[in-house]
Amino acid sequence: QVQLVESGGGLVQPGGSLRLSCTASGYIFSINAMGWYRQAPGKQRELVAVIRSGGSTNYADSVKGRFTISRDNAKNAVYLQMNSLKPEDTAVYYCNVNGSRRISQFDAWGQGTQVTVSS
Image (cartoon, rainbow, N blue to C red; front, top):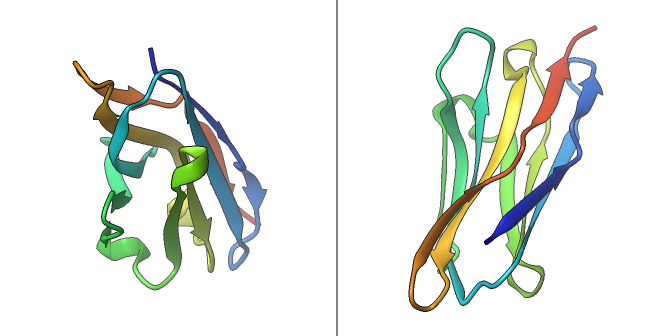
């Protein structure tokens, strides 16, 4: 079983920055994509950013130019650097990793970390 551990959430003022981290553990043969999603109260979970094995990335329009996703393949880790944070970025952020355990695929989710942007 693949497990994800997230860290880095918290309370920050508008305009501030936070860096989220997520590390995958367990038997992993290869990772296809690593991403961050978020869910605000009363809203559906939405994709924030994703980075694929080749390094290509996609971002939600609402975070382009402010958030940067990166990964460390040696550590099976993915990061989300969030700058110029806005109150509307307040949500629970979830890490997602999908890949292969050689004979089977996996799609794992983290437990979520709260990000609150407020003065």
